[in-house]
Length: 252
Length: 286
Ligand SMILES: Nc1ncnc2c1ncn2[C@@H]1O[C@H](COP(=O)(O)OP(=O)(O)OP(=O)(O)O)[C@@H](O)[C@H]1O
Ligand SMILES: [Mg+2]
Image 1 (tube, chains in turn cyan, red):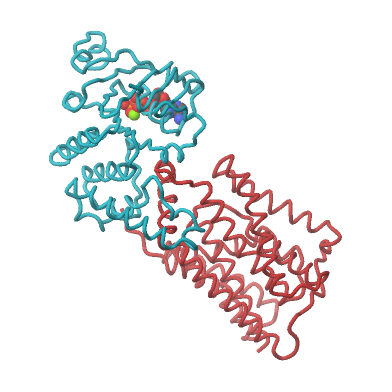
Image 2 (cartoon, chains in turn cyan, yellow; image 1 turned 120 degrees about the vertical axis):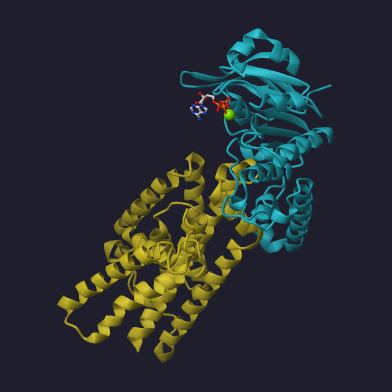
C-alpha cells in the first residue's frame, strides 16, 4: 500500500540550525501518527515543509505517490493537505461561521470575476460551505457559537474552531500542531473524539503533541524527533519504553 | 458659483481617489504611495488621446483607467513576487520614476504639462455637466467598492488582512487577490484622472507629486480607514472646510496660512478624538 503522504530525505536548515535532517516520514490512510520531540526539535518546521510554508533545501514530498514539490502553499491546500497552527491563527475580526466559510478547498468567492459573472455557482458553493460548516460545528457542540466573534470564545473553544476551520478542507491529509495545548475538560474530550473520527473516515492524520497521554490514547504509531532528525519510529509503547528517549524528552 | 462648482468637481474626484486608495490600503492591507501616478496615467492618457485622436471623450476616459490598471498589474505582479513589503518600495520608485519621465518627455509637455485639452462640452452647460458626471462616478465608485468588500469576496479580503498565512494555507490565492484589488483601485484612480484632465483642460506633473498620496491618505485616515463612507467624509471635510474661509475675503497673506492651520488642526483634532476615523468604529479597548 502506498502511503497517502511520504517525505523523502527532506532537508532544511536555517543558518547553523538544522530543522530537518533527511526526514523520511510516511502517513497512511486512516492512521493517526504521533509526532513527538522536545521544543525546537523541528516538528512545526516539518509541517511547514509539508504544507508548503517552507521550501526544503533538498528532498521530496509525495501525495498519493505524486511529487508536490513544485506546488505553492495554497495549491497544496487545494490538493488536500489541511493543517492547523500551534497558535491557531484564527481570523480575529470574523465570526466563527465566517472563519469556516472561507476555508473549503474550493472557494469561488475569491475570484472577483466569478463573484460578478457566475453568481449562481458562487451562491451554490456558499450554501454547500454553510451546510458543511454547521455540520462540523454541530459535531463539536458549537453550533450555537456560529455568529459569535471568534475572539470572544474561551480558549478551548477557539482551538476547536481552529480544527473545525481546517476540517472544511475535505482532503486526504490532516496535520495537527499541538491541538491539545491549553485545552482541558469538555473541549479535550471533543478534540479527541473528532480527531479519531477523521481518521476513521479515512484521513491520514499526523499529530504533534507534547501531551503523551493524548498520543497514547489516539496513536498506534509515533515518531520521535530531535534536532531535525527522526530518532525512532514505532508504537507509542516502544517509544516511551526507550531509555534514550526518556532521557532526551520525557525528562525522567 | 463657478468656484463652488469647481470645488464640487474636485470633491467628487477626491472622493473617488480616497475611496479607491482605501480599497487598496484599508481593505486590501497593501502599502503603496503610487496613487497619484496612476491618477496621472489616466489623466495623461485621456488628455493625449483628446488632443491627438478623434475618439469620443468617454472612451478616452475609460482608456485612461485601463492604462492605469495595466500599469498597476505590472507593478504589483512583479513587486508581490518578491514580497508584500516590497510593494511599498516599488510603488515609491514607480511614482518618482514615472513622474520624472513625464517631466522630461516632449510629448507629455515636460514640466509645463498638457495644455489646451479639448473641453468636450462648452458653454453654460459645461460646469453642471462635469458636476453631474463626476458626482455619478463618485457614487458609482463608492457603491462599487461597497459591493467588492461585502459578500464572499469581501470575506476573503477580511480574512487575508486578518491572517494572511492561515488564509493562504487554506487554499486561497492571496497574491492574485492582492493584484486584483490593487488593479481595481488604480484603475479607478486612472478613470478619475481622465475626468480631471477633461474638466480642467490642463494637467502638469506637479499635480501628481508623491505628496498627493499623503493628502489622500489623510482623507482616508481622518474619515475612517477600511470603511465605505470614511473616505467620502474625509475628502469632503478636508477639501471643503479650508476653502470655506475663502468667503471671508481675507487678504492672501493671511488666507494661505489660515487654511494650512485649519487643515492641521482638523486632522489633529480628529486623530485624538476618533483614532479609528470619523466613520470608523471605536476599537474595543483591550
Ligand atoms: N523561519 C525560521 N527561521 C529561523 N529559525 C527557525 C525558523 N523556524 C523555526 N526555526 C528554528 O528551528 C528550530 C525548530 O523549530 P520548530 O518550530 O520546528 O520546533 P518544534 O519542534 O515545533 O518546537 P515546539 O515544540 O516548541 O513547537 C527552532 O530552533 C526554531 O527556532
Ligand atoms: Mg512547534
